Amino acid sequence: MEKIGVFYGSDTGCTDDITKDLVSLWGADQLDVREIDDVSKEDFDQFKILILGLSTWYDGDLQSDWEAFYDDFQEIDFTGKVIALYGLGDQIGYGEYFVDGIGILAKVILENGGTIIGHWPIEGYRFTDSVAVIEEKDDHFYGLAIDHDNESELSDARLEKWVNQVKSELKPHLLSKEEYIEI
Ligand SMILES: Cc1cc2nc3c(=O)[nH]c(=O)nc-3n(C[C@H](O)[C@H](O)[C@H](O)COP(=O)(O)O)c2cc1C
Image (cartoon, rainbow, N blue to C red; front, side, top):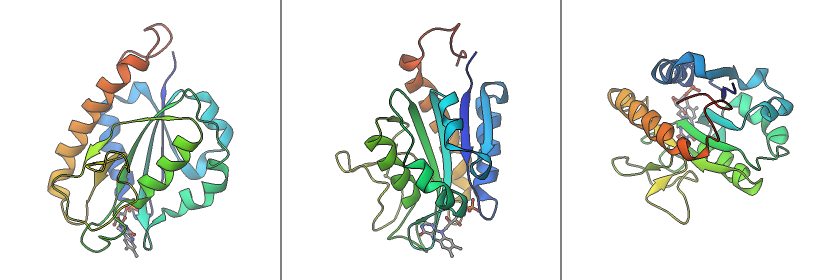
């Protein structure tokens, strides 16, 4: 049975906390969870389905471990892979770069042939700009945006709703119950 790869990076522990919540909501037995600084680009070959998590830093930059991995990330062939993204950011302090990291990863995944599921509405957030907003569908981010700095009280509900959405969007991509885990 093939698991889902959850690869994430966190500088001050917030994405780490959200990832733990994600794992308990999803069910740990279905996931293979790794920090991105422990991952090589060949590790991506093992997974058809991936959930990638990160925070955004320094005016629209990737979290530091993702930044270090970015050259390798750009060389990954995502053809046939289905990816969901979640990102942490601060819409008040960094409203011109809110969760940009989601958008930076999304653009590489799409350019390299991947499919992104788990688009998330921008409604309810206050920010001025973000590369995580989908150009052709500008009322959605490419993935779940969590603002733990300003709206931590909303994080649990956002995450739970998104997990259910991603599970349901994944169903058409699962070939058979024998080949893939039952979601
Ligand atoms: C110096 C600094 C720069 C930041 N830059 C951004 C940014 O450009 N965009 C954004 O959305 N959030 C930004 N943030 C907010 C972080 O992404 C947010 O605090 C996040 O929860 C950190 O997650 P982590 O602990 O997993 O790294 C910044 C925070 C700090 C302290």
